Image (cartoon, rainbow, N blue to C red; front, side, top):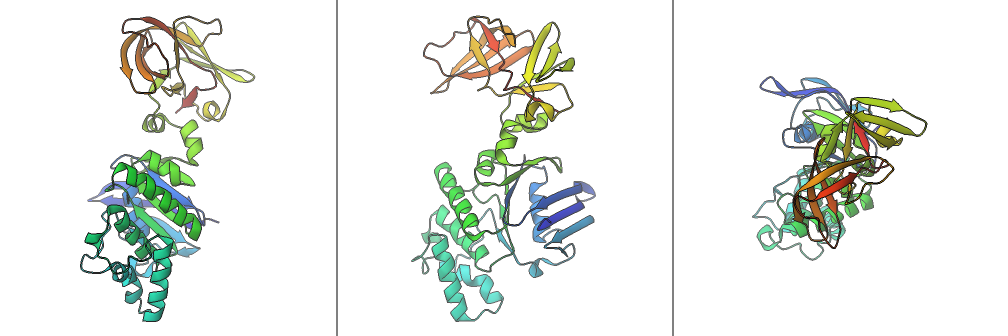
Length: 351
């Protein structure tokens, strides 16, 4: 049985629905990320779980109890805000201790628990400092410590790394994952950064217009997106719409115009009922010569761009333009005739 369940939940602002008949299940001890573009409903979902919003319809169950109408102050959930939300006039110790003192915990226990949690977030010895004396990463760890010190039943993150620079974001996401795994606390994490979500999550829910289009482990989503929206969102940029699809023993034959392609049967081709094929730029191969095994298109290099370790080509074909990333010593020139090869084990069919 799931620890957290949202069941047919609907949320609206000014009679405009952000979530409608929305479902989500999260197991004990998992870190689940809600990922998607702005306006997809991920922050609304987090605020609903936290208790800052009330659903028009549906039910929120937590640990077998109905939390649908439980007020925010009665939910023992820790919330880490995007803006840290630290009190500038309080020391690190007093910021972290704030929630415990609201709960009337005695001072001896406050001192013990604050000291313990500061060690967990690697801030031992920083007790007397003030927020203005800390770096962005240190402030975020204070915010995490404040959320954890109350021993929450659930930890919620609302884009916690968006205010940090790139290098610090990488370090902090490692810290968040370490802390979450060390404490075994169930966590819901909201972000629009796919690399961030994929690197720390047990499961990722990709949302679009208030709907979860795919909830899966990061590796499965990365290799086998279920829909064209997800494929585009996570970096697939080459698409072919086929007119005909024929099942064979271990392969799927696909026709568009006079061209036939073959895709291997795998989770990425069997999941979809549609005839749209997706391929990453890194998985396409560009050469100067044709091969006898099919799955290829003649084309002409339209744009050549140096990326450092590789070159990126936009290749014009009768089926449209395709983007290819390929490492090579001598790059192809604009206007050069080439062949695109579509590896059958890299083709993914999406709805």
